Image: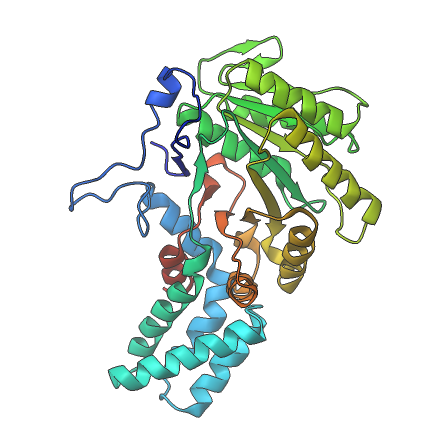
Length: 362
């Protein structure tokens, strides 16, 4: 079962390879009986255990907000406490103001006078505010789909790539990884370990490949050259997805950001129209700094999506509301494709606005 993405149909007139078993195993999100939600449908989870892990992971953020509604009246004091809780959760001034204005309107319309009812309305408001971030990752464009993954040191890029690769392989995709982080010691080895963990059981290793998952790496080589070779190899080998793991760097490091721009240009030379996705991995523990990273990397590279990691160890999960508000204000929202609440392979799942809101305010 694979709920991470939708297979994107090729544009009219674009030649494609003949359907392979991998491609046939990945249809568009299927319709499901009313009694059983489709795994990839909005508001549904393919793993009931995920909801429990998500609630557990968001408990630090949610507890500070939920306590506002314990044994209190619906008055200005409640809204002031809620405002403080949202700001402490790093929702940001703009998002907090928008959330409170919408909540007050709904409370008045519903004539709600019970804290539990107001809390439920807040979950609705939060889900609506976060809805612009809810978008599935689509693969299948370009044959292969090329994904460039960027972020600061320690955000969890390589770990997230490993988890994503596993789910892509389970969905029938043939994946090639580009070990373009040539600056960090043992980066190639870490990616290889994750590729082994991500591979389908029983596939068995081969020279330069692990079943569904293949790796292109060159010790001490130029990162752009490694990426060019990987994308070219992915096209030649009929891969469905190529993922480039890049070196971590701060957006204030101008010369290293230029290196990322070079990698992006070289990918385009290796495969016209690529990269199809530029994903930024951000650490949820960093709060408003995560929003600053989104702004900086988007200005440099034109982000297409986000992966927010380590939400299990933070009380700053409200930063997703800040990211959504920033996107709305600039007229171009960068969606959150995945969120992570742990180290296990299954602890990276697609972001769902309704699930997130309800888990946060359970």
